[in-house]
Amino acid sequence: MALPSFTQHLSMLEKFGLVKSKKYGRVRTYQLAPKRLQEAEDWILHRRKLWDRRLDQLDAYVLEMKENDNE
Image (cartoon, rainbow, N blue to C red; front, side, top):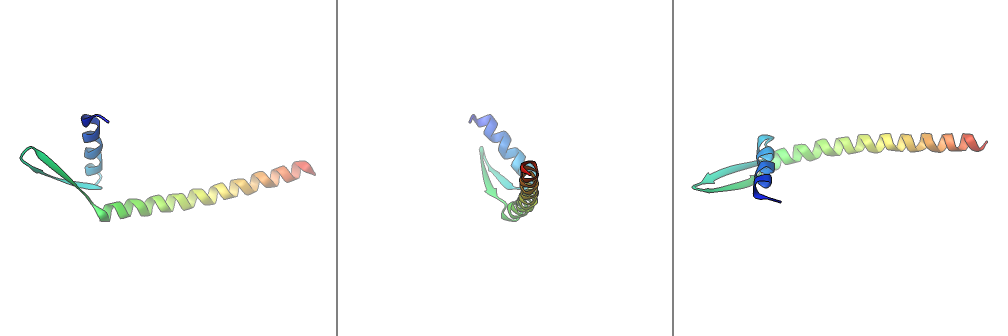
């Protein structure tokens, strides 16, 4: 990945509070923001559970339709 692209990604992560940065002279140091990362992880986990449930329902529906076609 090119440095400008990498810097752009870090800027977006900082914008959303997932990382923090400090500048010392010409050097910028980034640090993870554990609380915000935990919030993001919790949100992702909630969405994953939702989609797992929806996909399980879809699977059950498809199996039921398949069984009805065989009758």
